[in-house]
Image (tube, rainbow, N blue to C red; front, top):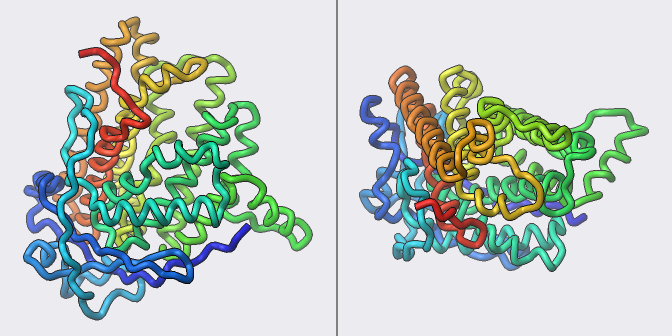
Length: 424
C-alpha cells in the first residue's frame, strides 16, 4: 500500500479565550449562528496534492479567537507552541444555509454554516487519501462516499481547528471508523458472525501488536489486507505524529469502547435479543460517537492534560455528549434503518417494542430521551466549568459542545442519507 504522506507542518494556533466567568459558561457555549469564522484558504502543494492553511488575528473577532496568553496558558498548546502570530487571512463570505429540517421538538443549537473554503479543501484531501493512499472503496461506492459529506461534517464539528491539517486528523479517523462499521458490521458485507475476530485484528492497526521477530512480519502484512485495516493504519499514523502520547492512548481506549459496543449489538443480533430500553442505552454509551469529540483538543492544536481528562466529572461530560449525539443519529437515521433488511435496533424501535407504544409515540419519546441527555450534558459542563475553571478545561468543554452542535447540524442537513418520518 502507498505510504502515508505527512501533511506540511501545522502550527499550533490558540483558539477562543477561556470563558471569564464560570456562571456565564453555559450561555457562551453556543455562538450566534450568523457570525462567520476565520477561513484560511489553503495553498495547494503540487508535489503531494495536499495543502495547508493558516489562521490568526486581525479583526476584533479574530483577536477573541486568538485565545488566552500569558502565565498559565502554555499547556493549551502542543509541544512546539508558537512564537508569533501568523498573517491574518481574509474573512470569507458566509455560506448559504444548507437544506434540511430539524427533528421537530429536538433540543439543539443552530451553528454557523461551515466555511465553504475549508469544506471544499477537506473534501478534496479526504477523497485523495481514500482513493490514492488506502484504496478505501470500489468505484461503485463513490456516490455514497461523496454523499456522506464528511468535509462539511468535520469543519462544522471543529470550528476551532487552526488549520486544514488539523481538521484532516479528525476526518481520516472518522472515515476509517465508518469503513470498519460498514464493511465489518453493516451495509457492505458486514455480519455479526465472526465480528469479534475481525474487530480485534483491525484494532491492532491503531493499538499495535508487540510480538516476536518471527510473527511480527505476518501481522504487518495483514494491515494492508482489507480497506478497514488500511484506513485505520494510515489515519492513526497521521494522528500519532500530531498528538501527544496521552492523547493517542486516550483515543485508543475510546476506540476499544466503541468496538465493545459493536460486539454487544452483534451478539444481540445473533441471539435475536431485544434489549430493555436501559440495556440499549447502555450499549449505545459504548457504540457511539465518543472517539470523535474526545480528540477535540488534538484537532484544536492543544492538550487537555491526562489528569484533567480523567476526572470523573469530565468523564461524565464526555459520556453524556456521546450519548446525546448518538440518539441524534438514531432519530435522523430512523427511516433509513427501517428500510434496511431485518430488524435494525435504534431507540424508537426498542421503545416501541418494549413499552408497547405506537411507532409515532415511541419516536416522540426518544426525542424526550435525547433532550434530557442534552440538558444533562450542558448542566454537567457548566458545573465542571465552575468547579475547575482552568483554561484547558474550559476550552475543551467548548470544543466538545461545538462537536455536539456540529454533529446535529450535519445530520439535519445530510438529506442524501436521512429523511424524517411523517409523524407531524
